[in-house]
Image (cartoon, rainbow, N blue to C red; front, side, top):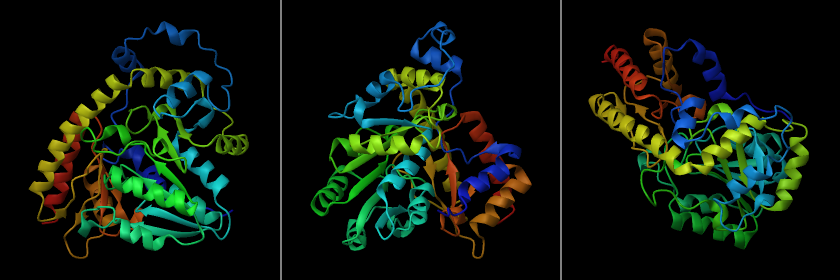
Length: 372
């Protein structure tokens, strides 16, 4: 199996350690352990007796039960805990996709959502979200991509990098097609709980259909990327099959990560309230910044999450040149749209520390001033 180079991760790994202002973060502001304990009201004592041994490969029963509780109709047997959503997506592609299958992927996309299927020998078709359509998902275009060999449709809602969402009627329509035609729907929902308001994001796909598999993570909406903990919720047979693969990948997660994830999920409302407040304040600042630079940059406001995917209006200026220039002149880290197959765009994240975010925008302004 030959995997294509992971363009986004290569860009970040090349620039991240020396960037002074990281506007490429895709997560809510990371918690410290002290902050997490304060938000949840937990005592640090509960950590001190944690045995630093191997954790169960599937995740602890206690954590799997907590996760299942967010998906009515699921039990712990439907949950596999993974090393981030990345491993969940990787495992699912490997157990579901065979050579010759058709896989339809919402695009642009985080590369693991399509490159693993390509490496498995699938024909990958791209369901494109277009800036000129305000990144609204077009179901007629999706329907035209689904054929008799379709094994899997891969959705990401809220969407990375655009912040677009599938509303509930559209998601139900796709799931109805899956039930009628016999394909599976992998729904990466790592930004689900950072929706702009009640009802902005559809319910978890797994709660709407037995043909859906939902993928979640402690990284994006929860601000706990350092735990490196994700999951999928799906049929028990998928958990069993993925377990066999996981024995060859990561075997298990850290028991400390398992424990802290359970703590955060048990106090989900407080954790998400903190992160949503930060994201909303940063978005107000970023939307004003976009208006300030509207002669140079166009954008569509994201419906949810902490990402935007603007484009450059200056003829001949590529996303890569813009991002490299911002990094070289001002130490500002962004991700070029070329890493997503979208020339002339760039991705910016607005979930981080408000003071650092404001400083980064000011330095980005200093670079933009050189382009006028």
